Length: 180
Image (tube, rainbow, N blue to C red; front, side, top):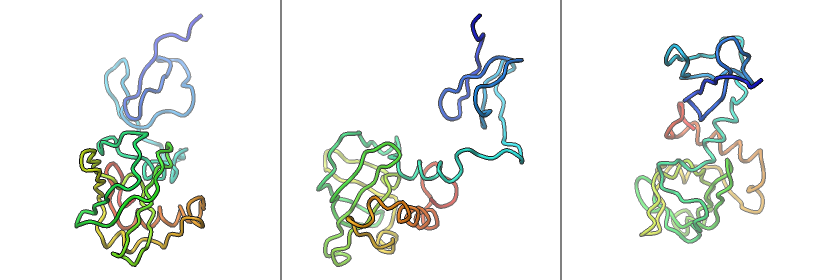
């Protein structure tokens, strides 16, 4: 005998739940849910713990926004990088890895040759014609970011957490709550 009719959550993609009377597979969804009675909003009960927590913020921070126009697989090396208030440098390295996308920006003489690690979510627009990435960050926010040494910090999870905390505190990113 088959599992029967299913309900679909609309908040974060499709999550299948058995119709009334059945047991959900996995944690109950939080957010808008379409049921036989129409749309409802399920909120997390005080005793329930999020299985995503800080990780969800990190996933969003290290992923390109769908609105940015970024096309996975595009080689961004050498592209211009523009902060919200002017030019800051060029892309030295980048990653398109799912939930681990970033830019390493060489700021050149602007900050005495400093390289900075910029989370992919900071990219607001990808200009394919001009080969330019536009950020939702100001020059000051980039300049004040934690020191980055590619060989030392790129794979360092503790450094990544430091970057997370810095950007969450200093910038409101699209789709986020508070700072990054």
